Length: 365
Image (cartoon, rainbow, N blue to C red; front, side):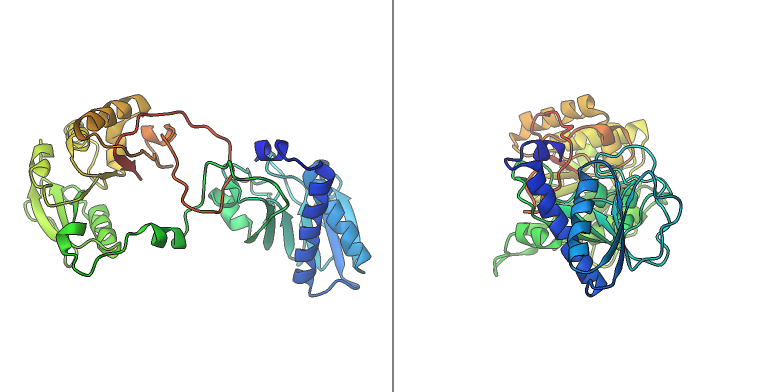
């Protein structure tokens, strides 16, 4: 977001005035009017504080009784009020912030609740918990992740004239998913949308069943579920169970993929060396799109080891697709994605920490 701010073509004062106007408008709506209402604004020294002071001036002109307090001088408890505007710190804040107690007043946060990390959503216990957050130009990752999601309250995005067209991370929402799903022809049959799921381990069927049910719910025509070491794996209603050898199962699964346009591998497989080897072999050789999740991510290893697997896959299948590692525990969690498909018109601005991998034909969830 800092790069977006620095690329702004309009003066900072203009942007602050627009942001202050948006905050004041939201405050009036929360107050149900302004005349005689008591408003406390906690303002820091940066642009976030400037936004709050601009909003304070507007509210005062509209008849509110406004008290502006510096973030460092606010103390432990704020005076009684009808609304507190948190403009102490913005998305660039690092460290811990112990917010003053607002009492019974609702809190309106400016851009992000003070004390919440704008990138990760991490927050110390003393960070602000807002009823409403007015954020500018785009969603910030910290409003979606970690404690930031809970502390932000209802989030309102306001356009103040910043260009976010270069954002490389976007929020995927329900409407986006619906738009990505292809329309199914009336004459379609189940094998055109069949999914093979290789998941679970003996006595550990929960993740495998959830995965299979998710495939059915997403519209798969038929789902086949195999669990290594299970001759008759427990399966949900309408899912077809398939015996899979306990060891060296990659070739057995590959031999059954002819009628399946998609493969899911990973949930609940375990992390034994033989399992890891089979998962890597299957991902590299599968002639269909693969979703690798959970223990399959562990099997792929770090970014260099994963690049070897997906490179072999690309040479065999000539696939031109992408890899999205997930924010989950394991070595691949820290690996950067090869690319980011634009999934929504709602950008989510963050620092760019990515480096390129070869395109590979595997989607890691």
